[in-house]
Image 1: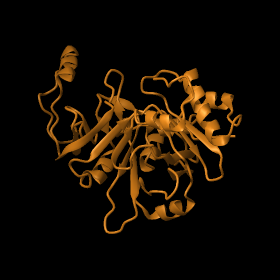
Image 2 (image 1 turned 90 degrees about the horizontal axis):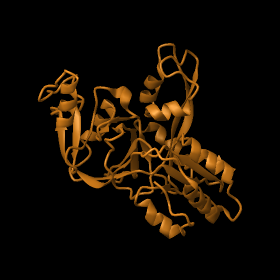
Image 3 (image 1 turned 180 degrees about the vertical axis):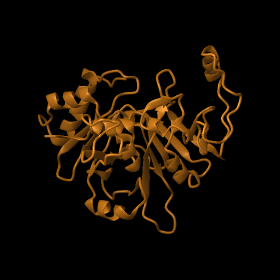
Image 4 (image 1 turned 180 degrees about the horizontal axis):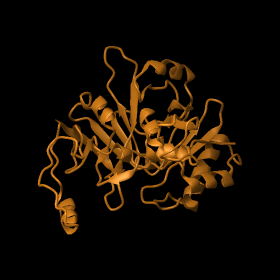
Length: 321
């Protein structure tokens, strides 16, 4: 996944955004909005009046019983997000008193704010519910699991077609074949219950065989571990299940780079591992630097710093100073 080698004018680059190659956001931290969002449910944010920034990074203290995954789930982040934000903290035994960083600051995808937007590179879903009764526009965001190698979650614009409560699971032919080769053939149908990998709720998409659903293995949220479906924590899929109308647009993108500018005028960059696992090359570096200099002025971009962020691709928001 590469960009054109020349520096694209802004409008042309915006056109490239629609393909999901790169997400560019004008980033302003709406501190007033953050203050009022403390009363909103987990994952819910007021849409900022200016800019595309929601949430904030903060720290919590682990208890002796916590795992890093417990903390991630409680604070609405996934496996990769919590791991990359705390590279030196044990996943299974953080230790009592350990300070854990919660990377709960997000740049909204540079896509129309309608329906559901899923950024597979970010392992995150954004839902824009229609405001009701004079409500302020909001966005909800949740960590997700997506397709693993050879089972990539398909990209493009689709829509929801049906909601299923307590769905049965019919193992596809590929799973039945693999299980039979292991000498453990699965049943033709798995009824609702604790052994059902779809969980309690499933939303069908207008792509045959693909769903947004819960899971009976929540530790896999925030990983590339499914056969292409989008998995959510049980409590997260339940929270949106009844409120997502049939026919809601679902825009699935692969945007591994985000750029932004704060209210103070400084530039920021955030990079995730591309789903095709190709390293960002010189073409990408030149385009990113060109966009920074288009906003900041000629000579203001730090090639070495930008290159390092793209190389690490750890999802952390980095100021470009």
